[in-house]
Amino acid sequence: MKLTYPAIFYEGEGGYAVEVPDLPGCASGGASLAEAILMGTDAASGWVLTELEDGKPVPGASPVETIHPDPGGFVSVLVLDMDAYTEKYGTRAIRKNLTIPAWLNTFAEARHINFSQVLQDSLIALYERENAS
Image (cartoon, rainbow, N blue to C red; front, top):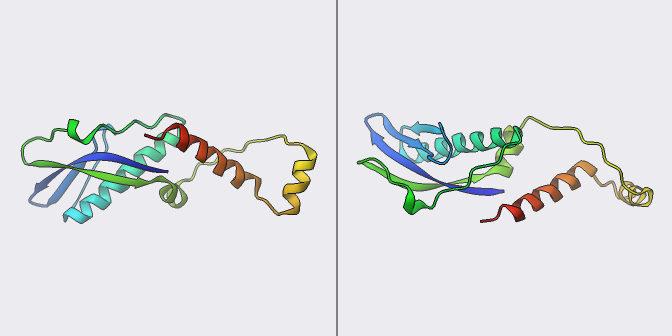
C-alpha cells in the first residue's frame, strides 16, 4: 500500500525540520533536505503503522494546496511504502482461526499454499480498493 502526505519543511541552522500536518505530532528533521525527506518519510510510516496495528483508521491526506506553512517554509509530498515498511518494522501479528471446506483445504495443501499469506494478500487488496483515493 502506498500513501502520500503533504509535509512542511523549514530550513534552519542545523538543517531541515519536517512536520506532517495530517499526522498529529509527526515531526522529524535532517542535516540536509534529502535526509529530512527520508527521516520524515520514516516518521510518517511509523506513525501510520502504529495506527494500523492499533486498529485505528489511517487519516486521509489533505490536498497539497490546502497546506500553508509559516513564512520560510515550503510544502512537498512524502510517499510512504507501507508494505515495505511493515515488512521491515511491523511486529504485531494476530492469530486468526478460520474454517474452509475440506476439498479446498486438500487443494491448497497439495500446492503448499500458505494460508496466512493468501489471507493477508486478499485483505490488503480489499483494503487498498476501499481506501483508494
